[in-house]
Image (cartoon, rainbow, N blue to C red; front, side):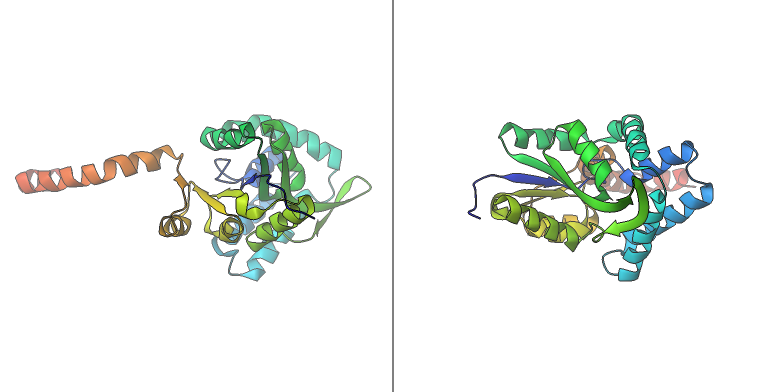
Length: 258
């Protein structure tokens, strides 16, 4: 297939588009509706945490999280979960969306460029988010269903790390666009393979490792976290003022600290 000049912008979801975890919001909403016990939620949250801390390096943790994510919706009716997903989107997800990220996405759309979400979030939820925000589409983790009920099995792999890069490469091959002309946005160093797969990588609310990589390679960085912006703006000035105050009145500073 001949390559087109079409540009596509790919966005990670958790902490990039959304303040927090989509699965956390989904789990919270389903727990409040009596779908799970506290024990179920605790087991899932623990698997989620361990996966986020070690998922890239430890395949066992990825497998453990995959199993927890599958058990999360196992045995539930697909249509019922879709309806609940819409309620949870309105209740929890929509208020937690970073406006700055949406503004960037809208700028791409205004230039007739496509916008796709690329996330480990279940594809049904990712598609709902993309539809509500007016984006082109979504790539997400696919959960198997049989006779309208989730089986607890996953189709393919969890869309994480290198799997995201493989997914957008497959999409580019199917639709005939050149990834060198495309953009990708993420907050996490786990998504460096995704960012490296495009010609225009960008960091949004980056973790420390991604921030280091972004500054090293001159990738544009956007940070919509208010506390972080305040810290960056006032940090050096406050530090110098504190040092000056200490030199001018060391005894007062010492007594105040007791």
